[in-house]
Image 1: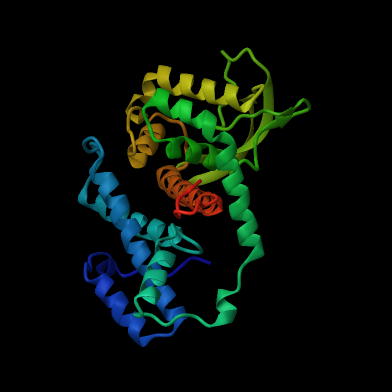
Image 2: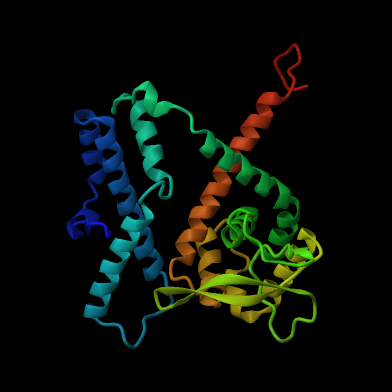
Length: 293
């Protein structure tokens, strides 16, 4: 079932935050969350628009009609990306409104912990901790944030749950690097999703197989660093959008929403990493002066 389109005027309403606050004061928690989700779709659409405006030049085929349909597509894409858990902005907005007393706090049943969600967060944190030592070196070589590297691996493997495998075992292929004609090492076949325009399809393809996570990271850094197609993704520092855009323009992925997905995943990596740091700090022993021993 397709979602109802958001009014174009809503995306141009820069007073939407004030409207959200008014809704929070007058509405039950469910309505507040829906309003926050709408605000997140506004933010996402503005992000998509700014990314397109930052592109290098315009196509010869661009026209006002093309731009109109592109804007409609961005609006619908933003709406879809904000469904479910979305980018996490809506939830943060609701929590902020509740802390300031602007929005009502939900009753106890709505705040019941979700063991499945906690387990998923723990698995993702474990994935981050496992590959971080190797990602740090790759990030240094490529001149990008370590969160960008970890997010790329998380997006390609479903947080380490879906790596290509062969009869010999896991391929340790963290980045979905395919085995082309020049690859002389071991291979592992797996299904992958390819896009023709906006239409996805599943195809079986050979992927490179590595002896370890470290070997996968080294080959990934070598591949990006030596291929001029990906030059625009390098030396981006903390600019995850620039890194992701450079990868997509270089042809790393065919998914038209790849940039948005990678940016959102990097945000999740940062959030989970921050939680782990706070948890570890809380476990440190304290000396008599109240400082970490």
